[in-house]
Length: 320
Picture 1: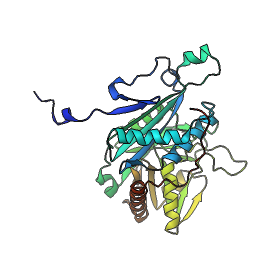
Picture 2: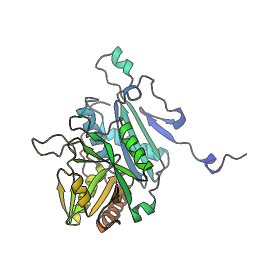
Picture 3: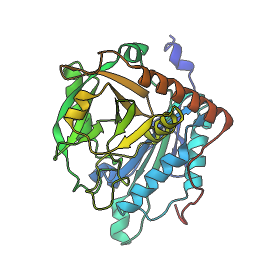
Picture 4: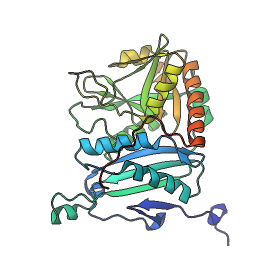
């Protein structure tokens, strides 16, 4: 008896610590720091035309976080990028959602050899989950998370494996019929969505809270992650002649926005038409969000078609 249309599909393989293994055979140590204590980082990327969009920028962010959190001093950036593209090619995917997970590795190795760093690196690629066009055409509703972020959290601007509270907020949002949860800091400043950066449009300007590393001298550390797609949207906005204003934003700024949009590597740009019961702008997707999303799609298509990866250095570490 047939197992259905997926029975003849080629089994996916993942890249695990330097070799490809079938996904059902991919295993890590029970003592792995990621499993034991959520010690690790991850990056989620999008692939088109068999190539990942701006993988160097993603890996630079990962390595910056690894160094700042004392997880690892160095990894070979170019080797990681090569492994990412090899994983997409190995699975014969033209379009894919790609994730690289980096953990502190087996904790018992640290006990046996203090100071030793032997990380676990896992890369997997899978067909993307399409974003329903109704969400782009009609916009989405978001709620405000009950929890708050603190600038005293050293990992605040990093994509760590400690994602439970963000996913819980997302689950609670879904129970209320919303698609995302907006997070604010303990000082009531906008930080972002559970899985996205947040951008506002007001008086022809594109507004964003400071991301980690963008703060003015003497300012408190930001809890906002410096998104790769966010940076690409900034480039596109400048090409359209828009002024970009990066500053602290609060709920009043959010509610007064003419347009509100969520940005990440998975869905690109999603327009928000309501925050809780408050209508954003005219209550429908605005022209800026639509235009920027179309431009972003064109940018991704162009760069992946020609293998372009701008805006990243070629420097890499000495180990990894």
